Picture 1 (cartoon, rainbow, N blue to C red):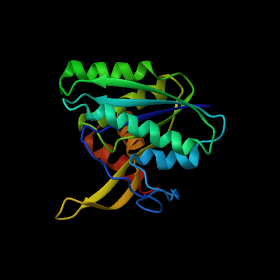
Picture 2: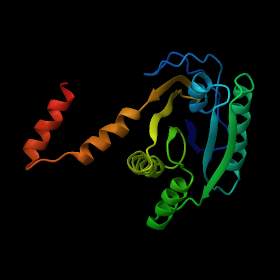
Picture 3: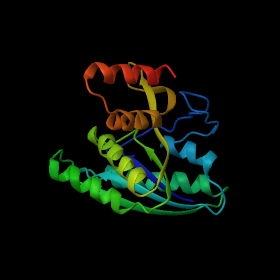
Picture 4: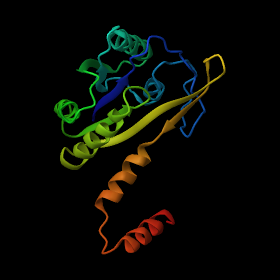
Length: 206
């Protein structure tokens, strides 16, 4: 099955590589530092010969940091893949830093245009503007419902910052369950709010 990777690319200038092995709620054991948490996941899930399309979601900034950071992503994954042998291609989707209805709709359509039917989807929402993960959730829902895609993993890397603004205590979280929870609430049918709450509570008790 083909794989497609969506990664939000940051606009800030400098990022610290961190080791995410054995942290958060994932079973990731990749012991080398990475800037982009999804690459720790891919290091353990990619196999030789896998066909992988990476879509780098760049929000344009005046200093050109998103362009430089997309280069860092490719260097990092290519280094990991040198010992695996997957077939990786890269594409970028650029957008202005405008939180408008038109811009959100364009981003959604541009992302959907990159998805083929019967594809496994991975996503990293660690970086990027706040609305981007919300747009991505809509993309994933459409792809799963209408394109027979399989949403495999949505991750983000959490870090703490000390008084000197130095990052520490990295944790890697898989939040794919939140995507499926959103799908559940959207598909629920009930005659009243009380019944809907009861149905949801019963689901959580399973």
